[in-house]
Image 1 (cartoon, rainbow, N blue to C red):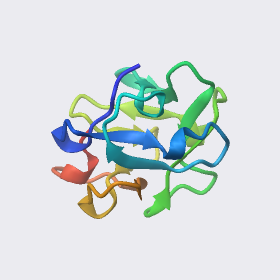
Image 2 (cartoon, one colour):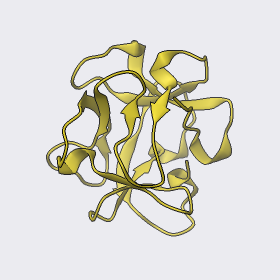
Image 3 (cartoon, helix red, strand yellow):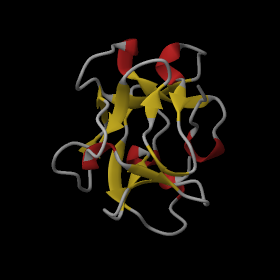
Image 4 (cartoon, rainbow, N blue to C red):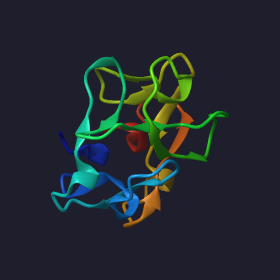
Length: 128
């Protein structure tokens, strides 16, 4: 798996809170620590964002929108909440929804849950 860093902050990582492998566990920002909670399987283009070595995926929920907190959920094929697109300019966008994985308020504070927000150009909260 690979670490996913917010806006080139190489010491901060996308992290599954408490490394708790359960449906609904928040996905947050945390100091990079090399644990499995921070290792992801992701590819360019249309992709699941899967916690490496598990069957849990980054999930935007059944009613995605601005300010909706990110979580993990059991991976399913063709589930819109888990269909992402990793763009050439390093945004992780919810496929065909106009929403991007977003660093909430641009905050790098440990344990801050990530969210989706409308994809906007040059928004550094949406670069990963």
